[in-house]
Image (cartoon, rainbow, N blue to C red; front, top):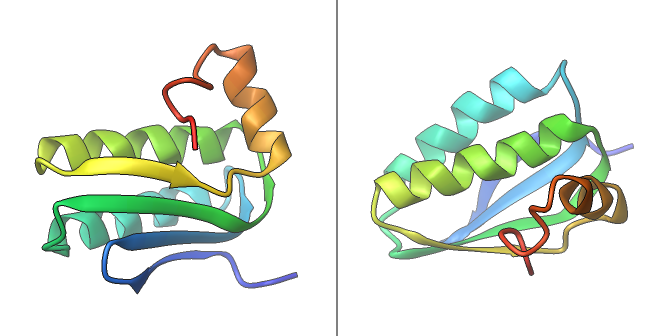
Length: 100
């Protein structure tokens, strides 16, 4: 199991990794928001390819990061969303919003 975290893997690429759940969510939310605000890139990619497991908290994080980016005038793209996150998105009819 890899370490859970959010980082700016490269300019414009926000990388989520590990297990996204109620334990990790609050810290990831704060870290991601700070990274988005500090980024000078006009477009950001949310890379979820390193997410090992996600509850609805992971989906909530993605939506919050997209809102943060929109508030900062940044466009977003979601990549590598794991199946469990994609299934939750489908249940809530958010799959088109988060299409990658």
